Image (cartoon, rainbow, N blue to C red; front, side, top):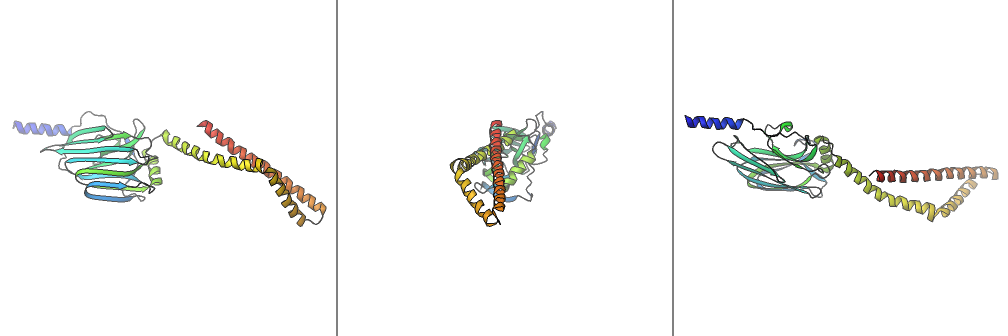
Amino acid sequence: MKKLFFILLIISALFIPGAMAAGNFTNADTWLEGQENEIAYFSSQTDVYFDLTGEQKAVTLITIDDITPGRIDFTLTMGSDEIHTGYINYTRDLFTADFSIGLDGNTKDWSALDNFLAKAYISTYATNQDTNTDGILLYESWLTNLANLQNYVFSPDPYISNFPITKIEIHSENPIKTTVAYASIVYVKENIEEGTGSANYLTWVYKLIDFVSQAFGVIPTLLYAFYFIFISHFFEIIILYEIVIASYTAYHSRDIISFLKKFSKANINFLDFWMGFVDTMIGIFAKIIQALKFW
């Protein structure tokens, strides 16, 4: 009787959640059934290797299930070649199961009464709403509430919307089932930005850096065009224009008076064009300089 009471006491204690800080996350809504997603299935395999490098595609969601007691190690490679490493460790005895998960040195251990269930875990892009930090989230998929998450590990990565996952490597001691959803890298980036709900200033910085890099590609071209037209060949262009316009107006004029009127009007229009062109060039340079000063 005492043994039975002791066993029931242990079981009831396992059902009572301990005092722990729950996670408050939002994640990119990357469902496996999403219209843009393609699916790669790996059934009853101990080793999974999935590489999208150079294909203009990226991973949206990773699900691991059919897990039996043992250890699983995995590596996630981002588009920037940054690597996230993690593990899932599962042991069990007669009454309880012990779990340990880790991601980039962050770990979580707990015990539960689900030793007879095939556990499932999801790795996805998420934002910690308490710290407004983007990153990779590894968590249980059964009956989870992302706003009150208990069993999880989170690794901050401010560049996830710019450099999502492009390669996955998994090694398991026992056969597992892995499902990988993936899509075009443009879709994945947009999905992360919209789905995580973060106010990540680094995304804005990245876009500004991209603008500046493009501007530095445009500036030499504009400078060369300006030099070619206004310094190197300005008089040749003026002379060529006058010859062409004089020939054209002479051909379409009935007398000298008509010729002078048309020739004069053509030169006025030409002067207006040059003034507008110069004003446009100056405006472009001014906007580029203003943007670079702001940066």
